[in-house]
Image (tube, rainbow, N blue to C red):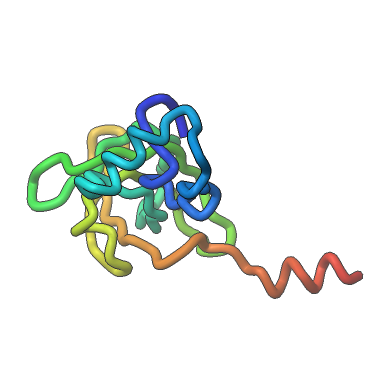
Length: 128
């Protein structure tokens, strides 16, 4: 997150106690809740062969720029590029197909339902 985003867009709303009496940014968050989100943070699986996303790449749908990546890298769990991206809410449904522009070429990508993490494998390693 940075000054251009908020915890509601980033999916961190469960960390914000809106029932608290007052805090910096509460009025702005209340306004966003009333008006609705313009974008949401999603995880993308990027189907690139030799270039991995790094961040600040444009995300395309129907030949229009619809968002941008915030960060990315090669995901060893998926054996594909992965990226965080802010997209309009209607494009945040899992399996939605978009494209990410990498070095001037548009590469197919899909919205994932959650972070691509192997929790069980990590737990097994921790127990050893």
